[in-house]
Length: 398
Image (cartoon, rainbow, N blue to C red; front, side):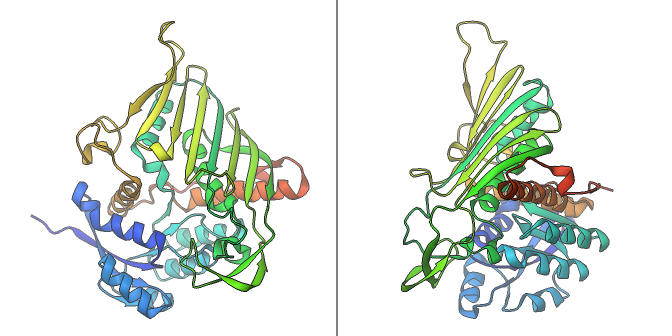
């Protein structure tokens, strides 16, 4: 058998998403047969003790403590960015200029201007790129896409999407980096609504205009000590200002005439990870809930009277996208498998020489919607997406 081409990966960051990405690279070939073999060449983090521990646990061959040194290495083909949002742009642009392919966590950057510069850099330097919107790669979401493309729902009228969490409701929860605008760019809006925006673009189409509000319920919090990203030890006597949103609510019109409502919050008690949506069309409707991610609820208007209503499809049959690579029907998969499915698309794109979607083009379009909602919250007006993002040509596969 011919040896597979290797893709030598350098990853910047090693916490929550670092673990998820590492697992995906390691297990991709267990379930699929990608034509490119991912090699966990080097992982990077500022804390040498912790990054060495992560390298040993996750299976990386080596580690670095400065991302600049990682990018300089000649034995690295792709840079995977799983750091806080504030340095996505600097790392991605430097990687592209060094001729490295780039895989980046969402949101793409702190703001639209940074995101556009990242897209320009990867295009100018002709490197391949992808952004991690892993929820697209749940088999149920891919099957929903097929139903819509096949016309089973007809013309789309509505999408209503919510992403509800409750992990910072305690006023004594510390001021972790996700609550600092200089580091994160925004709060629940960029962290959670970005996922809903991506799913809406993937399933419904492009946004035309938006209007919305952002709200911060708790204005000050204890400063954080020894944070791991999602939590940390709160200072007993020092506080700081919260300068990001706790909640985001907006409505949207789409280019195809559909309308949408979107809500993202970290203050919805009882919701641990409530990423949900419902889409209504002229011929039927679909519903999905991340906490029941293998299931897609489907309703068709042309069912005969008396048996009409939502049916639940467990998307684990061989006919469902990606599902054939896993277990027999009814044997469900989990959150981590969405990353595996995405990584397989990334590896196939690298082998075939194109940037799989969602790529930096999608990241820029997503950032434009995020920014338009922020502008609307400040001006209390509808904001046209074309006014926010001028002319952006799609990335082709050629």
